[in-house]
Image (cartoon, helix red, strand yellow):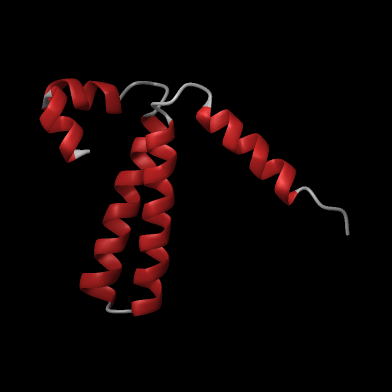
Length: 87
């Protein structure tokens, strides 16, 4: 987010982050950053920190896909098809 904020300007970056299409992705990404920092600096649990970093990476990918038309819908359909199993 910092690199695109540098390229397009901070005001436009914040406006794009708060766009209704990506507001939830932005909130999830920022919350996962705070969770990773909290786990690393205050909890001092390596496993929780690793889980928080993995969540942060997934949230960043989901946020980045909001800039590509129909990318999140396509990934959602693929994931539903992959995990749709009968027991």
